[in-house]
Length: 241
Ligand code: ATP
Image (cartoon, rainbow, N blue to C red; front, side, top):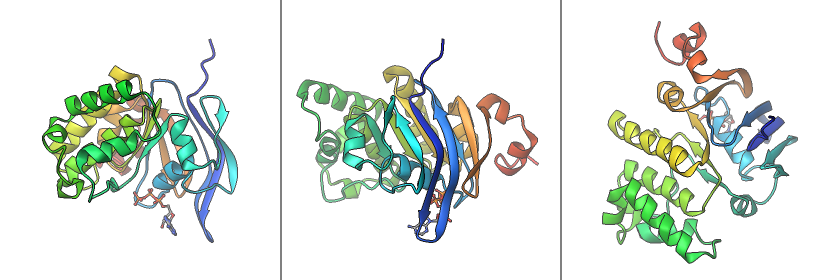
């Protein structure tokens, strides 16, 4: 049977003034999948996510989420449809408490019981956030802020999460811990995930399907276990030659 993708991009182009950042990107993420976009610094990975979540409007192309056109819609509207974005650099509210940061993620939801359940779930994933719930988020370490940013996205009750470089600036140990939780979120909640990473090794470990982005274009895509075996991927992204 034909399954409908949760998210699909067709020929999406975005620019910053005269600078073309993505040049005709097409990709699909199937329900319950973890998909990843690999690419070096400046390849356009963050721009793909910002275009999906409505932060920047594409010049061309179409974005469909759960059967509905979301191209260039208002970011808050897109979150309400069930698509949450965890931006690069976390962007937590430093002067709000950890708990209030989490509640900001849930501000559009009416079902308080469901919000309370999700709050317990993220405290289960990241117990340190419960311990620090009353503290200002600005006092958290980088890794803890990443945990908070992911948790805040979950509090919006999304069907799908866009994750921008969760490993950025984190130790290998913390990176591993965060990725383990990302996999649990996917498996336990059925949340579809699009992960953007420079850490190709980690991303290929957790994802089902991978896209390789170079200079704003997808140059290769395949199942992650097949991508791992390709000489170009080993050489340029896994540093194995
Ligand atoms: P990184 O992980 O370093 O952010 P990336 O693959 O996510 O890399 P993007 O941030 O999407 O890359 O950037 C793609 C291109 O767009 C780069 O050439 C970058 O210099 C340019 N760019 C990104 N943001 C802006 C901006 N606000 N103004 C102008 N150019 C930008």
